[in-house]
Length: 104
Image (tube, rainbow, N blue to C red):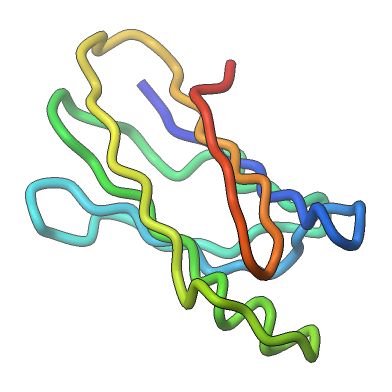
């Protein structure tokens, strides 16, 4: 199974390019990447079963765009139970709020 993500800047109304993303499993970093010009990381690598954490460096992204933000990072914990499924964790982002869901 693989993991992808898509980060959208809700205030600017466009993809959030250049966001640093870190994937952890069992307390260890297993992958790092940055979102592309479309705000995507298309393949953050294979996943095993269990609980994972994906962390987005939102503070760094907003600092690079000259904006202050309340959340320096967003961490989303999720559980993988189906070893054959693709997992997609999108992030809708603004300086003072965020939302996420299990995408397809």
